Amino acid sequence: MAPMHGFLTRWIVLTIAAAVMVVLLPGMRPIGHPPILGIAAFALFLALINASLRPVMNAVTQVLALPLTVMSLGLAALVALMLVNWVCMELASWLALTLFGVGVTVSGVLAAAVGAVVMALVSSVVNSLIGA
Image (cartoon, rainbow, N blue to C red; front, side, top):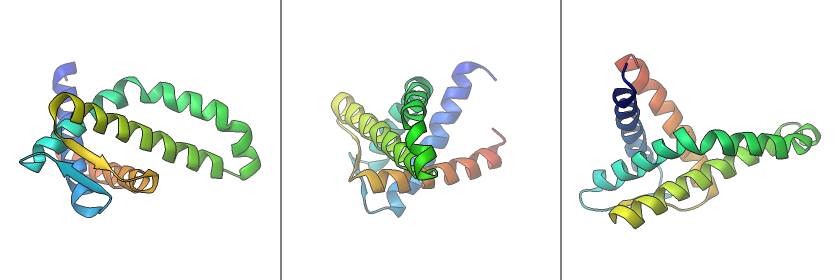
């Protein structure tokens, strides 16, 4: 699969997952008319962040949280991942709203954590359906 085709497929899958997340969670609100434009812009920047910044953020978070993870039996890793998800969603939201005037607002860390779970589940289902 060509790199651009793979990115476009990933973007479409993330847009579908983000749309389901926005519909299911009251802490997520689309901005823009029609709302799918805001969701698509949010998903675009989330895909770019996942491809570029997220591996670095996860590595730094794991190294910094390792001693706390051992002492807290994994709770620190869960909290660290929730914060990373929140930062990525807030950054994607800010970029979409700043550059395109449309996007998705995230109401807090818990909404971002639940949203990440919803997006992961929906992305898995959609990827399995399309064979990606």
